[in-house]
Image (cartoon, rainbow, N blue to C red; front, side, top):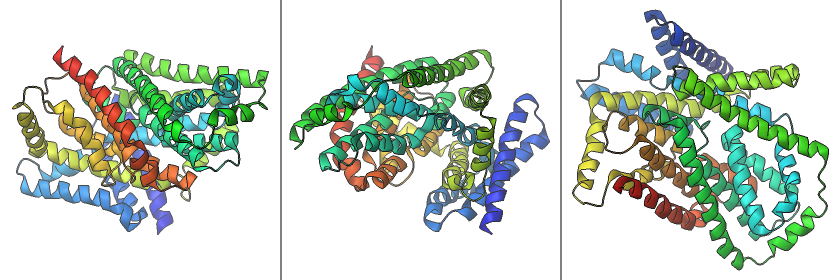
Length: 468
């Protein structure tokens, strides 16, 4: 039964993606109906594949969506099922194709080469901490959540058998803070691409603004580490000098570093170029660019056999795409929930109510509260990306007197807080699986000071833009 459900999920989701791209150039009633059908089938197959606990979030959203449909005269059942199944179409296709970027990073030891190349610059605790924060964000551009275990294993290889609690605290805080900051500017993050699209924000401005705010976050993280380090019982700088004394730079390392920089810049440039040339939104452009860029890499490197192996592994019913059924089920269910909220007008009522309250106090506005919606819901087990999609899906139909880039920044800072503070979401759980510490210790107990400091600084920027 499970194998049949896995095959059904792979086939239905693949056909969903295929018909999505077909409809971009040729639209018909049949194609639209087929898209809805494949979306519903994909959702049903994910629910069969999931254990009962993992089923709770999508079932909760589906139940809520159905109740809204039943109690609201504005939401017609036929449109609810057809439109709801297609609500997340571009995001789902992006989720399907975005892991292909990670295939490229697996072909060579790019991250190891970066560490070896810059080893002379990494021989103090603060520089090394800065290097981890930066490298984690860059690797997240290719690997998303996968950057955490990859970077952790790299640190394990560098540090070796050192298992002191100070070392574990050092690694955990750097990785979690680095990954959280990536959600501000890494446009390959599906939730960021989705919010940028629905809010009609300028993608170039979003990336520049997010990069600058992330750089501010890196400076704050290093500053906070400077004070935390004083409580450490070991001298990390001296240990790093000893560790890196055996490292040697060679021509192969230099070549890999240059190749990695070229890959990163070429992907970024291709996204910006296609965004300016093609008449599609960024959610549609990203999968096209990623697929073409990945294919071109393997062809130029003459690694077609490896590309075939990656495809075969990814679409394997045993341990491929069905392993991500939980992720897809949540976004498919979120489509129905968002459609019912917007169709019934309930979402507008809630946000308008909050907005009306904020207008009663001169200095208070919605942007003060928006970042908190993501971590509060994430504490209940929802992924930050899901919360951003839900909140963004509601906000898109509500005229707010703020630039869309500020609304996106408020939501992405909320995503930063969720990654830092919630022990129930993927980053903290993955990190705990690697270092053996509790998710609560890795996240909330260790990161609350940085999250508070970052909130104060980002709100100072946001409110200054609103006022002036």
